[in-house]
Image 1 (tube, rainbow, N blue to C red):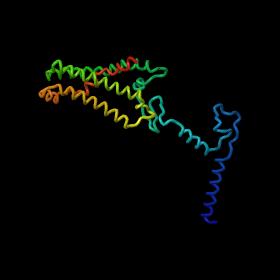
Image 2: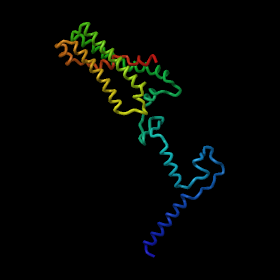
Image 3: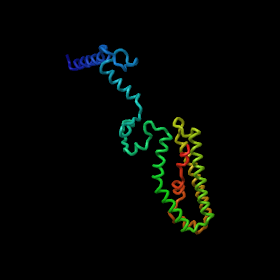
Image 4: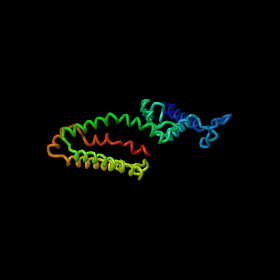
Length: 226
């Protein structure tokens, strides 16, 4: 008997043993498991079915799973520091309670930036010599643009544009373009109220209308009354 014949016989024997091990019935347990489901059946197959069950369990599990210190996303563990977990809604906390807990934190985090842009605005007014009309143009442009942005975002949220089930990246891009257009229009409105010399000094001053609009506007007031 040649080695090729021996190898062939061994291969057939191993394949038959594997098939027999995968298809034979395991003995019925004396006490059925309390959580046994009808999909599992009255018996389980031997080692090959264990692999199939594991694959089915893995395919049915969610791609994102939270743990005590982070998230498991498609096999990658993203660790989240403890202070970040405290910023998320806690167990038994409704939306209003969560809002009331987070508003003081948000205001405290924004306070230094709001003080910074206020100092920059005052220094700009001094360096450029802004009169009462120009100050009013700046304040009105900031106030009205912030309100227009809030209205647009609320319309998008309530109208379903930002719903996860129908969300598309181009929707976000279009919305961002509209918001940026509002900011640019307001900035041009303020710039046009300045004289030629004031515009030159504005170019050299660190004041930025977008920065001022972002941090001087009390955005949290829009949700504090909900």
